[in-house]
Length: 366
Image 1 (cartoon, rainbow, N blue to C red):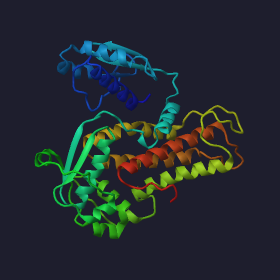
Image 2 (image 1 turned 90 degrees about the vertical axis):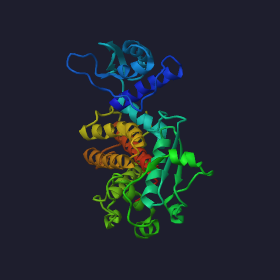
Image 3 (image 1 turned 180 degrees about the horizontal axis):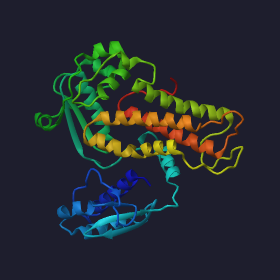
Image 4 (image 1 turned 135 degrees about the vertical axis):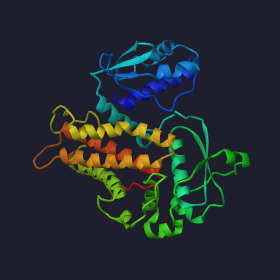
């Protein structure tokens, strides 16, 4: 279990306690966990009970006891203890196959891996000016907030530009009232300095969206010819190339007669290898993906997701170069290759899901 997994598990426990009317307090957007300090107990600790005690009209220790009962026994957690005024201390289950469980979770959830229900049913209204970067950003923010369970409505201050349709932008039926528009959160990035038609003519839809979303909203979007460079110095190409490469590995494995299916017999029966440093770095980024989506939605910052996808892509190539998922030379397919292939495929799923939230295509061939 990673820190991101543990944070999500505790947050789920808070939500369950609130839903069961055992705890009457607002559910936080995120639960912070950190390494236990010297002299503390367990592997990780959280002060969430102290945070919720006031709104819940309970002591922090009472809140901690409520959460402990709902976290204890969860997969990957060995023991939960309460220390001091109400700190939760977690000892992880050292016998759990943390890495295999993470890859299996990505495999099971597919493109929805990282989506959550922290804002389930919450109505969110967004509005933006009649400007292409504002429109693209507002709709990307809408997609991120929806990924956390909210009900989102995006509106433009004026009649939309017809060219926005070519960027995948559409609007929900039913005009909001003047009061709803006035109360909507405004999305106001630095303007692009060009129209949608001009940008589409130069870059096409995918590079235009990436060029508008990759910089932070308060920074100018540097819309240059680098967006079209077919090389790893272009972050968009790097991300999409990494995604396409994961599909190529799956096709290559099929030609060699094996897949990443758990438990599949291979020509060699060696035990799965211990992940190397490059694999661990990639696994950590995949484990962080749910927290990145939640933070990008909370801060209305699609650029956070774009930068995360770049980091995942770079870590994938580091992993790929250090330990090939396909047999090399006279090697026979083994359990180690199957495990590496599963990690590569999980990476491709995360990249495709992230690009989808940004409204960008993730082709299997590039």
